[in-house]
Image (cartoon, rainbow, N blue to C red; front, side, top):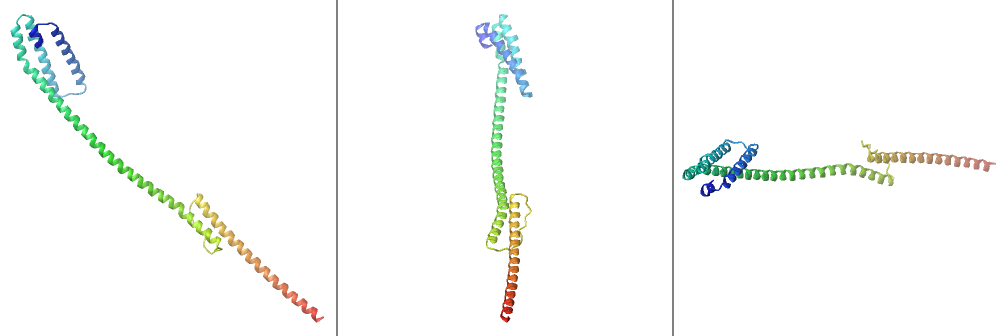
Length: 219
């Protein structure tokens, strides 16, 4: 506008109208995202200044009253200053809000990292405990079976049968060890009975032999 009243070049009016339309288009887009009384007031002030320039500057200049057009433009300068400072203040507020949001995100991210580390430690500890419990559930019965097999190898059949309430391979191993213990006891018992029978039979044969010998001698 100032360039036009200083030079009278009509091209400046076209440039002004182009930027005026561009500003309206931008306002329409921004209204879809930002709605506030402060911004609406600035938009209204900017439109008021544009109308003053179009009607009280350009039109008056084209009517031949150059000095009045320049005076009207000077009077409208306060509106331009108000719009500019208003948008600068809004931009500063937006920058502060964005910075605060960024700080909140960083703080939240840090908190999430701490929580993630704590959860990871807890999961690790829980996994170790489960592994230890599982290992104990497996190693304890296996150790008992190994000890019982060693006792059987040394001929100790006096121990009671092992008890376990499991249906897996460990349970089958315990059942097999108990079965071996029982069968060995039965086998040894059978051998003992056979030995006693053989001993008794041997004694009877010896007695019969002695009787036969005595009878022969008497003859």
